[in-house]
Amino acid sequence: MEHGYTQALCEAPVDASYSLQPSPIHFPSSNRMHIKLYGRPLSTATRRAALVLVEKGVPFELVSVDTLKKEQKAPAYLERHPFGQIPLLDDNGFLLYESRAIGRYIAEKYANQGAPLLPGTLKGRALFEQAASIELTNFDLYASQAYWATDGIKRHGKEPNMILFHEMIDKLGPKLDGYETILSKQRYISGDDVSLIDLFHLPFGSFLKSQSPGLFQSRPHLARWFDEVSARPSWQLVKDGTQPTFLLLSDTQ
Ligand SMILES: N[C@@H](CCC(=O)N[C@@H](CS)C(=O)NCC(=O)O)C(=O)O
Image: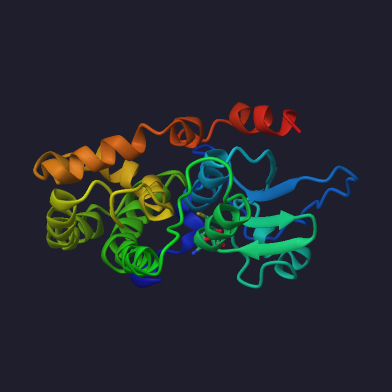
């Protein structure tokens, strides 16, 4: 990772002490058949995956992986996730990592419940893939670094790097002008229906909106879109990463 930051910085309690030693992770052996999401309630990538599960009304259990204790680097976890990151989905033995891949899997598996989130036509899918690429290369690339330089590192009790933050905000500006043009012509980023790609913007988009509101205020179509997507009940449930949200969900099984 550039500038000496690592992805480990994307979530951690403010007051926790940092340990470089991997701790063993506990994989619960349960006969209950349900989806488990290994992660942390406040991790941006965990919330990206959890959001889709909530959108689709899929009950799941959030199994805590303490990234401060390096549980994600413990051998038993690395066997399941070779990059040692969160989130990791376990759908009754079917393992999947990468939050966006998890979102796509859940959206397709539960296509008949909740909002479709995936387009059904060839051209719709092509526009969806275009939007997926936009999110990764024109948004996440900069937004994630702005996050890790500030909120992410502050959670570890370290000083934020405001120079890097502003560098990333400056780079995002022209990219968001592109969003403004797109969203002046259509309601959502891949067309007139909400899709996974709109949802994928929420964790880092919310951070940007709180830390650099001018990015949105100066672009009315972008602001309208982001407000609309942020207001979805799924995001209202997962945005604060509060543990009770997930416990309530796992209680519904
Ligand atoms: N591209 C991955 C990124 C996952 C990621 O960056 N996870 C962070 C937490 S938000 C993590 O596991 N950090 C710990 C580490 O990298 O060791 C995804 O979308 O799932």
